[in-house]
Every structure is written in structure tokens, then in C-alpha cells.
Length: 248
Image (tube, rainbow, N blue to C red; front, side, top):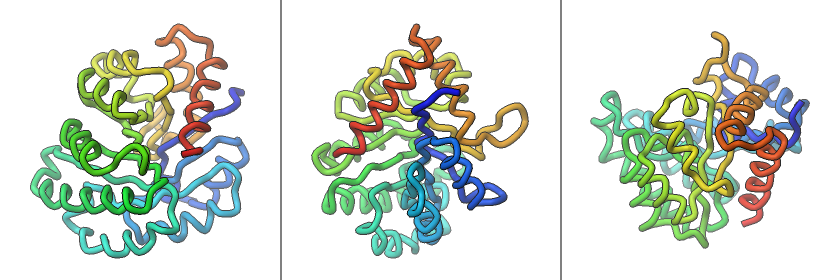
């Protein structure tokens, strides 16, 4: 069993038994960031995470839901003062969601501005087909001294990734990213001190079943091979990155 595991992006509230999913992360001692897709889901996630050592709840408003849920932005803003972690937020310019892209940008702008005002927020950010737009907005609206972005399941170019890293952003890597040759090449180019791991369960599958935080072991093993490191050494690097990130 690998120690110091990190699942920095997992939808624990979308499993069949939310409380059991939280308990599993706690039992396995896996730092798990429980992201939400709507601010209405945050209070219950926060309630379950509050009694744990390893689980944290993130306050989200998913870009894919902006068309139906933009009116929940005031609720998100109301909860922000109580939330250290923010996500899932960001932009999605994929064909199914492009019609709401301008609305997504307005929501994301408010989120970034509010995080900058309050400070010390850690964000997990969606950027499907919108890497440049996301990086541009973060650079303009969220100084590194006011919060730290973590780019979740990042699929931008190597140039986009290099720019984001230079701006102080982190990247959470999942197994699916390592199964795609172009994305795998981009991941190898990332600075070691900006790497975190994630499952994005239950949206990712492992052997036909929903991925769970424990499956982040697979990602650590595959990423270690790509970086010519031992699994234990890479796990410690990721744990050190998390410790540095969470002491902002």
C-alpha cells in the first residue's frame, strides 16, 4: 500500500452512498478533495468532511451547469467565506456547452474576483477546450498572492501548460490523461513541484467500475514510470506539493 496518496478531485457526493465514500477515504488515509457541481451540494459535503482528517469539501458551480444554475451564483457567494477550497469551477467550450460560454465566463469572472478579494482560496478548475481562456482569466483576476489555481484534468498544449506553471498554477493528473499520447507528453513536461493526482471519480472508470480515491494508486504508479522515479518517491513529491499548497 502506497502512503501519502492524494485525490485532489473526486465527486464523493455522486457515489451511491456519499457518507460511505467519505468514510472510505478517511479509512484509507487518502487526502481527498470532495468537489461539488452546485453550491447547494456544499453544506452536506462540508458537514461530512468536517469530522474527518483527510477529506475536504470544495464549493463549486460547474461550468457545464451554468445554463441551468447561473442563478445559484449568489448562493455560491454567500458560502464562500466559509470555504477554503473552491471547485469545480471554470470554463467548458465543448460542443455540448458552448452555447453558454459567455455566461460561463461571467460566472467564472465573479468567482475569481471574489476569491481574490477574500484570499487564501485553493481552486480546482475545469478547462475543457478553454485552456487559454481559463489561464488568461486567472492571470488577470487572481494574483498568486490571493489564491492558488489547480488545473484539473488539463488537456491544453505544452505551451499552455508551461505558461500556467510559470504563473504558479498546479495540475491534478488522472489515469485517463496518461492513456492519451498527446496528454501524456504534456504531463511529462510539467514541473515536478506542480503535480498533484486525482481520480475524478465516479466519472472515470477502472475495469468497468466507478473509480474511487484508492484507485489514485494506479495513477501514481503510471506517472512514476513516466518520470523514471520510484512510486514511493513520486508519492512523497506529490504529498510535499500538497503540503506546500495548503500552507498558503
